Image 1 (cartoon, rainbow, N blue to C red):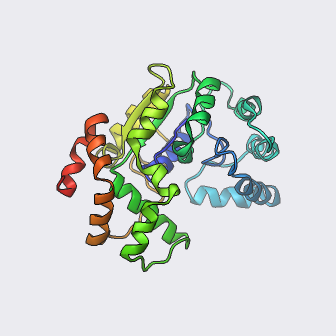
Image 2 (image 1 turned 180 degrees about the vertical axis):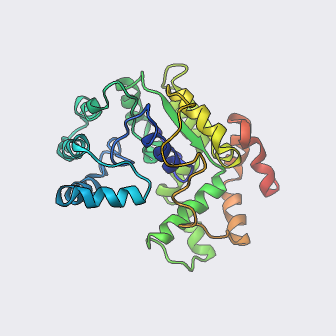
Image 3 (image 1 turned 135 degrees about the vertical axis):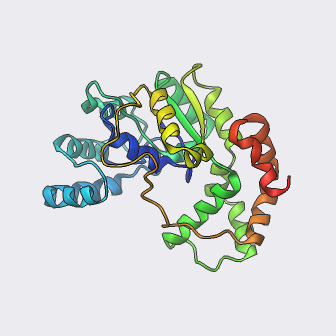
Length: 282
């Protein structure tokens, strides 16, 4: 499971694993199954309808988008996912979704799992303690701004955000719960067996995508020497979609709100996080 962070390379990871010969990844990213009120059934229904209407045409579009083609097993996965019990978490039903992977590796890349509350994290860890868990941390100021820009791109927010609007966003749980990597790492790592959880840094992906790919695939049990089909290690399908310069005032407001977390990241996470406070004069 990759539990996040949102806007920290989880789409990159899904793309790399989906086209790697050692992995069978679900036909859709972000199942959100353990965010119980928001599983992505509507996305699955839309994909299934398009594939059942004209699979050849749908796969041609996926090929143009550098995605793997869907086959009969993928359609079964989507159908089974849609049919999962809506009234309670069903670990056996969830696990059965991945039966079609055979001897390959597989997983669920859902950055929203970073916002799960401790009781649900306890349950996931209890049910799937032998799984490998990945968290990719990112500078909280830049991560927050990237999330804001994503919501602007999706028209959930207007383009003309003022200071008051940014301050308001900083207090909303959908941003706040995903912005504190130290809390997320502590919550998950403390509940998992040693060696099953690993922290990575978005900075390392940006700095050396090939080495980052090697390290994360090796941790997950795949062979990093096997090439990923059709895409390079630095492939980024989201390039330019939600990016925009962070205004200086917004940067200052966000950094002020995140000052404690920036310092905590440097101290508790180490690695690339040690440089984050200095970017904001802290």
